[in-house]
Length: 305
Image (cartoon, rainbow, N blue to C red; front, top):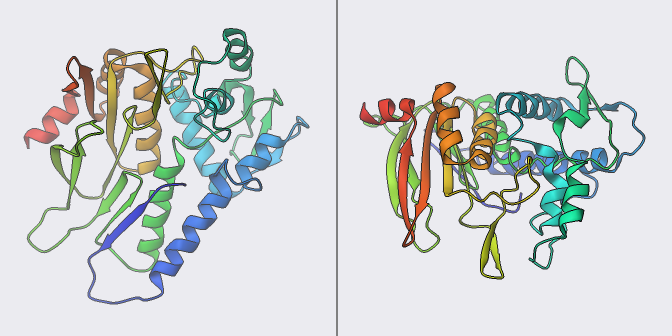
């Protein structure tokens, strides 16, 4: 997934084969979900132009079901079919020259975007593209899904106290030690210069994911362009929201929701979080490279306890 992973386990037993099992599982996920792998399952789906039903692996079926649910819940702000738009702006598989694409090209590409152009069988075991040009990019959900998969692998091996992180997305279960309550997870301020912690949250049997615009962006003609592409307009988002951190029972959903809220912006994102009783921490960019935190109602309640 072109990122790092970190796993901590509290256990009296030693298992020298565990890391190999983890690496193999991550490789399998890459072979399923990565658009950078020419023969991955998602790449084969993207290349298919027959308009026929395509059988999905159980793993891909699970991810697509979650993606479809979050797409509907977020009114289309989470949309994995922004793949061609992401490429067009130089943030995807074909790195661009980092300048703004032609308006007409953006509009034409936007016509291929929309999860409503993807059809699924009732049990999500098959998929069909109604537009052969539509491409799916799972980068906004795959890391979270990878965290959940590794957590499942650890539990199958009998581990009950662990924390799994892939590229900043985290899931924790049990306790770090006998004295602690869960595992401490830091929510950092979205600043590329420092890694200053804004909140330390004890995480137990829960997951957290963050989406932000402060690490992947470019400047062109003195204007800043974020890698978060709006599925509504085809352009990078232009609000002041710098990062969205979502706590949820599973990391797959947390990852997708964080992306959706980033696409919405701070006002709509905070309303969405409150309407859906989500534990969300937002950071809004202010003048002078300063950041203001906005907490959902549930976040305020959880952090006070």
